Image (cartoon, rainbow, N blue to C red):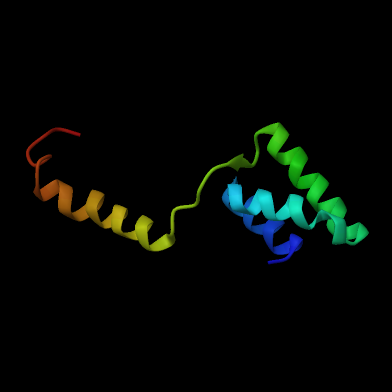
Length: 83
């Protein structure tokens, strides 16, 4: 993992995990100036609420959720209900 990868992943998902935050703090002594700037920016994004501490749901789980909501549920318990 690099600071750049972590920054982009957190920015694109809006989430940074606890493990990633711990990795940032435990490796900050070895960051270059550019990496340090990215870590500081990430911290500001967390402070502003743009990036939140949490967990990411995998794309496969999201795909299964979409299939359930769009295909299975209309045939199941929500059948016949008005939307």
